[in-house]
Image (cartoon, rainbow, N blue to C red; front, side, top):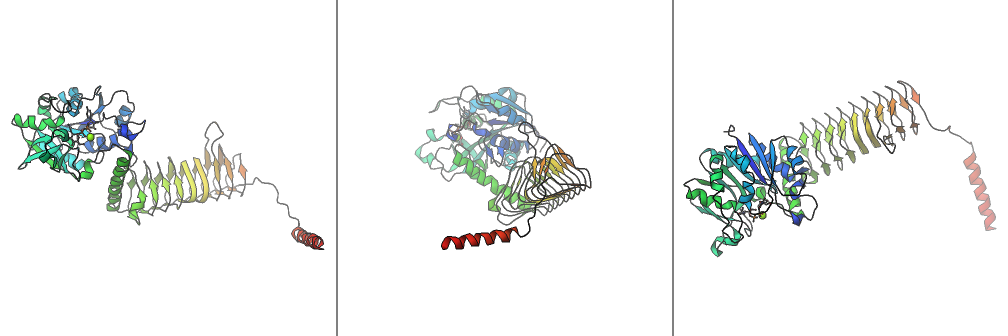
Length: 452
Ligand code: UD1
Ligand code: MG
């Protein structure tokens, strides 16, 4: 089937006032990805999809976010909120371009799976003109109810228009729908607003299509999949569902997790084979972890690549641009940002490595700081292959440590160090033999003197 073209219309015009946020609702994130991006990507995964986003007037950030998903997107503004069918018709121009399948998706329902959207498109492909996505609601209050006869949906009745008997029905409308592209405008343009709220209800498409002698099908989804987000508490619930899915997928792909419920992943986290993630690890967006790598407890990682066989943590922090080669060791209380750490290099304890390169097999001692910032600009530190940086050294960028060079402990290095040499920058050690013994003797004398 995959050959059919599709227009996915994403309704995102809700004000989202209950989020109590200056950020538009659909630009909030679940597993590091905006709600809008989740929905666009789920649609895109079903193949040959163009997207139309229905945005509210006067809110910014929609176009940038939508366009960042590598899917053709156009943005339409719904100037007045006059109902879900009115919102869909805002994209009339896109509908008129004639995609075979129209998917209508809700921008604040990011948990919908591509497989479910595919089932909706498949139902269109075998002759339905309208496909409603339904679910069994634990508490149906507030949802439109699906009125079914046999395996057909005859009508959707909104809560505010439902009889007492209809209010007892738990089979509910998720709000997601699919329409046959060649029938969509004819159906949508017949929808009126003669209801309690005087809104143009998309749900009326069901009765109208039936009146036109067209087939209406329903597909059932899990309630979790169609959960809408209106509050921060619901955002956290969606996060929990998404995290469970991501952990399950990671373990399916072979990742070992001792306490998966304590590991947080991002929607785009990529794992190789035989990766182990210990308890209490947080992984943000843009992370790739290659074969055989181990992430130890309490590490926080974002925007980083972790090469084959590398060991990270416990208590490591990898920030964007951290690029760890094969068998690199990054130990406790080490922070790495915008730096390449080449194969076999080690920074095992207490260090800051920012804006630089650590060459193959180099050793960064405890307490080493890459002083990358001079108050105005960031500069680069380059540590050569096999170099050894003694503990508690400050490398003041821009600076280069040559291949195989040594930096003595406690040095503040401000000038380049040639390959294979030693740089030492600290005062001469002074030793006063017998001094401590003499001090103790002097103290005991004064003590005795004090008593008498
Ligand atoms: C809608 C459905 C209902 C379903 C429920 C699921 C209709 C008439 N009713 O009801 O059957 O059970 O969703 O959550 O469709 N929107 C716009 N512009 C508008 C109106 C709505 O963009 O003018 C968007 C909203 O931002 C929201 C979505 O459409 O994302 C649904 O609208 P909402 O007002 O929440 O509809 P419900 O009354 O919840
Ligand atoms: Mg709603």
